[in-house]
Length: 401
Image (cartoon, rainbow, N blue to C red):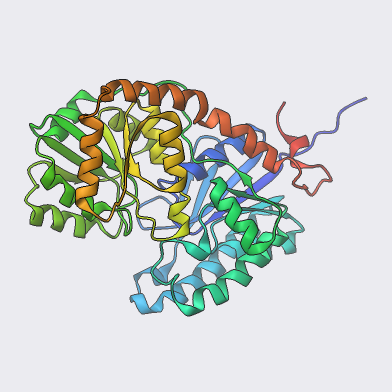
């Protein structure tokens, strides 16, 4: 009997940013492409990234939002333009499954999926009712966001989130079937190679190098981290990332009198990031538990640091603390809003009974065994397995064997 050829099932991911440095989205898209799916990611242009980008196994198509240049008070118009343009782009893809990443593209994904008779897989990367946005505390946010997000999550063929605590909150808020948990861990199989030249430059004549990577935004304890450096003579600090807080960080560095040993650097691609991380003596992650989304966060940077063989100094928040205590890979910051508390946790790591290098090696062994994408990949595929395709199959039946 001759087997009938079937075209590749198609997945359209929709993301309301430029999708330049979000490793979790890239990992999921690559994984689906490796399993035989055609994957297209619709994103928002930022004036820097190209309109069309070919990545490892999938394509990114960016729509330009002309209202981005308008005054800040016109933000609603920007969202309307984004909805119209991403809708057109997503509809043109004629996909079997639409995959909104975050709360904003849920509307577009559901509208297009309904017209195309396709399925929706919702990735709730954050707790949108309780995340680090200035307007979340406003009276109108939960009034509008809860019915909006709840409606779309209940209609999704599958829902995925990144941490157990976040899954608990989503179930409590919306009464949905418990989302699949697929953690934000790096796709590495071996230790990265340090860059001794970069390390020497970043050290600036000091003895030890601290590193923060990721978004330079509020409630990450970053200004407090700069202030803590005044209590840490002999230490240098490198920030690698971007965000709206960057100018304030640069100004605080000057005010604190630590410009000779603290610097802010632009973000880099994943391979380079892992090399820089491996070049540090410790990674500092002083996230403030200002919202539930942060309380239950276990970010990429935690597991990337571990995989790089670097001990960590992190806030004593639920998910991060569970990993750090369980794997014995660093120290905890009791109060990341207090520079003295941050400095104390750094000193506790380097002045403790155990050599920090041994802690780093233990972290690396733990990461490569339990906290890498090879462990989480099957969970992603399991979450997608029962999603219906338009040819009558389930997604799991279409996965490459």
